[in-house]
Image (tube, rainbow, N blue to C red; front, side):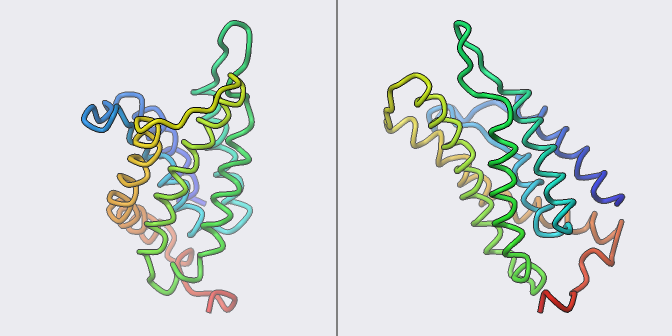
Length: 180
């Protein structure tokens, strides 16, 4: 339970810190996202109910920090990313047996793909509300670059979080009968 509390605090810190990390100008102002990596690590380590609670928390934070109302019209509504995080974290949780066996590389790649999926979902929601879908080179860079950065950064983030998990609750990382 201590590790779950630590993850909640880290998600909050990462979500706020993302606003202060400057965009990558050479890659069409693509942003770096750290909070999804923390949530996705929690998805492979935590039991299912706590994983859902973490997804709900992270989705609520993302929604409250990115709700857009332009001209009295809501473009990104409150609650959509809770569902999105729950689905993507569920995918990661389904891959938990691989993680327990030490196959981290699969989760690093899936975490990057899921990070890009979050951004793609945001973009699609905005474009559907505006009534015009346009995929330019810049849009693809802004969707794909955070996923690539997540793939590259996730081994370090997962290692640090794994060390914290092991220090706070070693039983959390043990193999269980249903994981083999």
